[in-house]
Amino acid sequence: MTMTSHDDASAKRTETGNDTRRIRIGTRGSELALAQAEELKRRLIEANQDAGLDVEIKVISTRGDRVTDRPLAEIGGKGLFTQEIEERLVDGRIDMAVHSSKDMPTLLPEGLELSCFLPRESAADAFVSPKFKNLDDLPLNAVVGSSSLRRQALIRRLRPDLEVVTFRGNVQSRLRKLDEGEVHATLLAHAGLNRLGLKKRVASLLPLDLFPPAPGQGAICVETRTGDTATGELLAGVNHADTATALACERAFLAVLDGSCRTPIAGHARLDGETLAFHGMILTPDGSKVHEIRLDGQATSAAEIGREAAGALRSEAGEAFFADWA
Image (cartoon, rainbow, N blue to C red; front, side):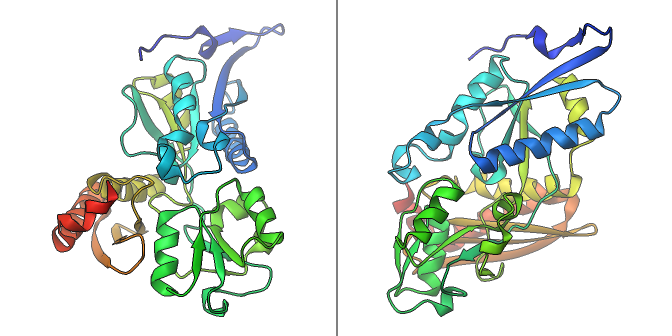
């Protein structure tokens, strides 16, 4: 794909004579994606009050949203939620794209980069059930729905007796299926439920030490064209440095492990002043084999910590461990 300039992204003169800059944010169309786009829009305008921004949210349908009857691993993985949006970013039809960081592949299309992270919400997974309080409370052989291989593997690790079934769809559709009795419980990102005003649906939170999140979970990221300094300047006042540092570690960890929707990988970085603490885990899909690592270091070496942790797990597990991930 080749990049082209686009006049709509430049300053324009309105009928009143004021200079405005039109910014188009590309996003998926789910309620959660729109809530995240609105948060970016609000922060962008607040951080650039003198720039005369005219911010438009453009909804883009992705294959990942359209195909909900099969696991992501069977139809192409994480890129299914970004490809159509990124195509419009590359050719200039939008100026930036807003994503859930956990949905982003580690390898981006040429000419694109993650240039901004909003302050991270809760990274935890929420246990959601109309009748039961937590995983331990579920009866023998209860049915739990999840589309995430990481969550499925962690559930099976903690409760091998449970029946875990694939549960695709947006947050609302999964909650509807739960309420209709298709499953006894499901797990959803706590951050997403918070952003949708659905805190009351949370029965409990999964402990981060026992149930570490997906790399990037709870964080919103912004993707832009590499070299687009004007857009980068607008986003500079929005970027949350601590979240960007934590995600640099988590995404480096994921990249070394070649993470995709076929791989049960968990990783979470936390900052305490100048120190970064990382917890990483890899599992077999049935949860029977687990390797994990905890590694601390200077926050300035975030990416190196992530890569070192992933390398250590690869050496410990052996390449045979990854054979079924291909």
